[in-house]
Structures are given as C-alpha cells and as structure tokens.
Amino acid sequence: MPVTLCFDFGNTRKKVAVFRDEKLKEIIVLPDNDVEAIQSLIRKWQPVKSILSSVVDHHPAIEELLSINTQFHKLSHLTKVSFTTPVGKPESIGADRLALAAAAVYFYPTKNNFVIGLGSCVTYNFINKYHEFVGGAISPGLEMRLKALNYYTAKLPLIKADSDTSLIGYDTTTNILTGVVIGMAKEIDGFIDAYREKFRNFNVLLTGGDIVYLGSHLKNKIFADPELIFKGLYAISEVNNP
Image (cartoon, rainbow, N blue to C red; front, side, top):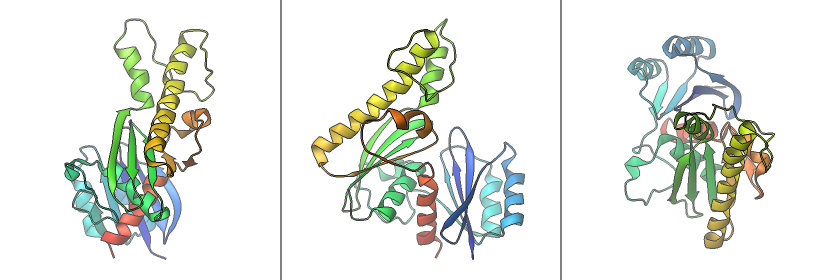
C-alpha cells in the first residue's frame, strides 16, 4: 500500500504523519536538523506522495528533497481544495487553517463545522454546509499566554501548563494557571455559544496538542481529534497528488 508523508511545520514544532493508504500509522516530531531526518524517513518508508504545510521559514532543501523523491505538493492559497474561500484575501489564510477546513469538509461534508485549532495561536474556523470557509478568529495560544505573563512582568514566573487546574487559584502558580487555562476554556465556550446563536446547528471540532489541558474544562460538546490537521493534509494530498 502506498505511503504518504504529511508535514506540518508550525511555530513550535515540526511534525510529520505517516499514512499507509488512508490509515495514520505514525506521527514523528522532527529534530532541528530536519533535512537529514527527512532523508532518513524517505529511506525507511519509501513514500509515493508528500505534502507540506508550513507557517515558518524552513530550509529550501526540504522542498527539493521531497520533490525529487515523491509526488510533492506544498499547501498554499493556490492549492485545490474541497471548499471555497469567499473572504477578502484568500491568499492570507494560513496553511494550517486550510488543512483544518479540508478535514472538516472531508469528514462532515453535510454539516456546518466550527474547527478550533489549539497551536501556538488559537484559530477559530467556520466552514458552512455549502463548503464555504466563511472565516473566524485568531487569538494567542496557551504557551504564548504563559510566556507573555512572564515576559511583560517583573516578578511573575514562567509556568508550565497543567490540566489539573481549579476555578480559584490559591498561590501565584495556580492563579496564573486558572487565569490562562480556565480563561482560554471560557473564551472557547464563549465563541461556541456566540456562533450557536447565529448559526444554530454545527459540529465543533477541537484539535491540537493543548486539548489535554483544555478539553476537560469545556462545557460545550465537542469532537476532539488531536491529529485532525494531518487528516486534512492527507485529504488535500489526494486531491492535488492524484
């Protein structure tokens, strides 16, 4: 069965998902020396196809390497997708958001979908049942908020995220965690409630590594899938790398 490598280069980590046919087999976090790591992946998996979603400046040799060894596609506003983008500047939509929208349309094609990506930033993405990416919002992510409190103050420490967070903090650490983790959960629930007033029925899809910290604090019903972006990349690859 053919192998497809789906690369997601985010602001925090560079990762690759290995698909054998339609099944996700493995997810790998790439080291800093990503060119050599990708060479090793190609030797190991012998991929037929590859796709790259990148929101960072990556080494140009990566695209050349993938182009030589696979049917390669780089995600951009020129990519063929299964939805339209009737927004002011479709070329400004991030590659990660395109992948999330593609996954929503692929898995829930008859539904309105509200996809929330928990990465370096929180992205809110609404795709209606007519397969139109209407738009959404962007706000700071969990780690960004924690770092900002430390960076812009003289005495607040840098705290690591924790899912075991209560509504009322009892010291500096727990006060920060309550403000950031519970605050983000309330923000997400607030957006969901506001969209529900406007659009009534829709799926809420939550994805990204920070689900483990936020998922249990949300009151709204969600479909949590940490790997949704990779499934979207695979779907896009199938369209652009037939």
